[in-house]
Image (cartoon, rainbow over all chains, first blue to last red; front, side, top):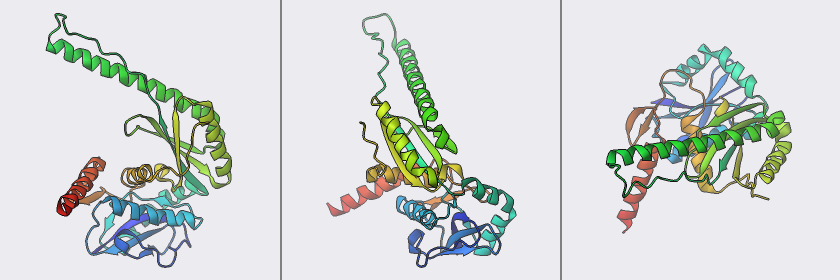
Length: 226
Length: 66
């Protein structure tokens, strides 16, 4: 028996009635003084499945929908009881309160930039006197050169977006690209009042860069700024 | 004008959710331990493992249905 934690919330922020978390378990509040945390009770530690990850996210998102910006907690935080969890949160109350202030009134937007980066040509060593070892080293050099081309393109795009979106972005996080074709992934922390203007601005950025594909997701809880 | 979807396709959204929930977010104390297929593992780049487990389950279900 134990509890699974979802997020840290400020005082007075209770889960909506009937909110279900991982595995359909009821979400409750723990803690007697702010900050508080949302958690659910389970017989055993929940498996890290894609479905449970989505349910974990849905609970954090529920806080955001209620108008509160929570500090999201990473999946996998398990305590033997709600009291033990509340004690652990209370032990770093100042840090959690600072984190809540940092994200207060904000949401996160994700930006994934995809582009076709020209391939660095492989050198054809067939018919030369180069052996297998030389060909292998030349391939390594080609891959390295390709990485540098991608890195340079990513840095230029990050600078391009930052130059235009900077005034509306309270904080930014640059993450390594995932998946084929992805050059770079950004996360922006934006105040709710600026959301509309931010979305328009990102559309303008995309218009100005027809050579890349820009995918925007959000609004998210501030996963990248917790 | 390039398309800038604010609500992208489900596949990308789900991948983003998993990426955020497992790779980002704050930690209350100590190590983050997650359990995959009943085995407790200290958190370390488990997105790949998750994909494999889910993939295996999907394949098992397909095999069972065949």
